[in-house]
Structure formats: C-alpha cells, structure tokens
Amino acid sequence: MTLNKEKIKEELEKERDALKTQMGDMAKLNPETGEWEAQPEAQDFPEADLNDQADRFEEFESRSSMIKDLGIRWKNILSSLKNINKASFAKCSVCGKDIEAARMKANPAAKTCKKHLEN
Ligand SMILES: [Zn+2]
Image 1: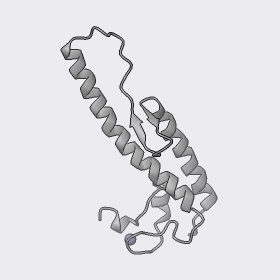
Image 2: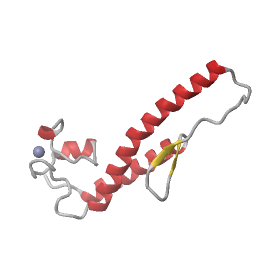
Image 3: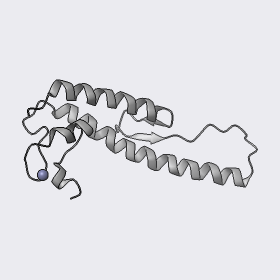
C-alpha cells in the first residue's frame, strides 16, 4: 500500500493547528527558539495566601510538563511536514523499512515502524 502523502500532509497540518490552539491557552511560542513556553495562569486574587500560591505553583508545574510533551509532538509534526517530500519520509529511523500505513494514519509524525516503537 502506498502512502497518500497529500492525505498525511493534511492530517499533519490539522494536528499542528489543533496543537497550536491547545497550547495557545497555556503557553506562548517563542519565535526565537521555536520552543513553547508555559505561561502561569493569570492571578485573580493578588492577596492569595500561601496555600493558593502552592496550588498555583503545582498547577504551573503540571502545565509545564504537559507543554513539554506537547512541544515534542509539535516539533515532530513540524519536522514531518518539512520532510514529507523526502525519500526518507515514512521510513523507520531504525530499520529503514516503510512504516506501516495504519501506524502513519494513527500517528502521522511517526518516526519508527511498529517493531521499533519502543526502542
Ligand atoms: Zn523499524
């Protein structure tokens, strides 16, 4: 089965835009580094007590780690979009074989075949 690159490109662009919307609520894209940076939640009550501050800090921490994960996905998608017309696209980065079409469909930014998924 040959890969439909147009279709994959469409999927990647859709996912990129969805990610951008999702992260846009919690983070800002730094145009210089290309990195997403988590933003603290706007402070509603400046007089917040220490408990509130601790909560806010915890929330910022979890937000940061989520942004970090989403940011990795973001970069994978961007690099897939960049490489989509290269011969290496949709080839496993470990064994060089074609990545299964079903896997590309589930994750258009996939870099490895199913066999090398965890390695
Ligand atoms: Zn492989």
